[in-house]
Length: 299
Image 1: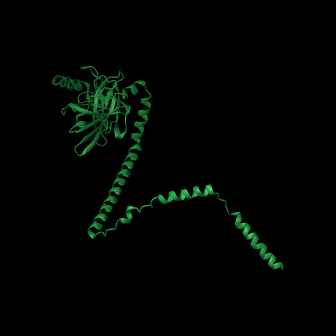
Image 2: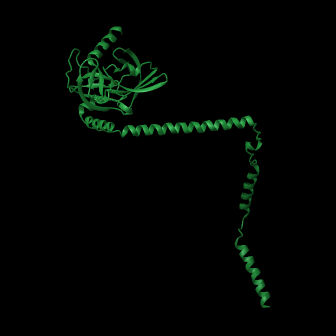
Image 3: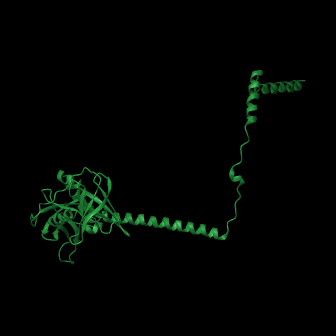
């Protein structure tokens, strides 16, 4: 008797637990539920993706070889570009940690604190010149307020594109106006109006004495707006100077303490071992005046 009663109680408890999970749905709710289900019936079945209808066509041996060759050349290209980037980084680091480079960077920073030097730097431009088979970087400076820029002839020789970057980072395409291979001078022009002051040339016929202090501003060794100082060693054409010059300094103005351009850097002379230090070479201001006069006469 006790066991049957216990079994009956378990069935009742089971029914009660089952009822706990039931929800009463009134007629209105049933109608709403039916309407929702009717709407679902109207939704079309999802279409299979297009890929299900495509068949993988077997690739012949020639196609497989072509793909493998393409991947191989892509890998070679990636390795080559990576090598160039690494080589460029090593070259830059090597240049940066040379003792003379550290010296001219330190000197440039100190000179740039001077208000005059800071103002002169605004007149100097960086030239990126594209030539057949090569790309070179040089220096130039505004010689008048009409956008005329002076530089070296060898910097812009055979150029099919010349881009002049100003101190504020703006860049303009420049065109060749005139050039002289004899004295390694050239004038290029920016047609756009730019609010940049020009650097005045030393008066024509003025003598530059030996020992005159000069400041060089240019773009050596991929640096920009580097200022260095030195003095005139020997006058004449070319004029030799003691200021350190490097690749990229071509076209840099040499400026005296009065803020006048006394010459344009165009080369470096390395003496034989044990016969002195290397010197910079510049075209004197008088030659710049002569070329400017010829350009105006022809223009």
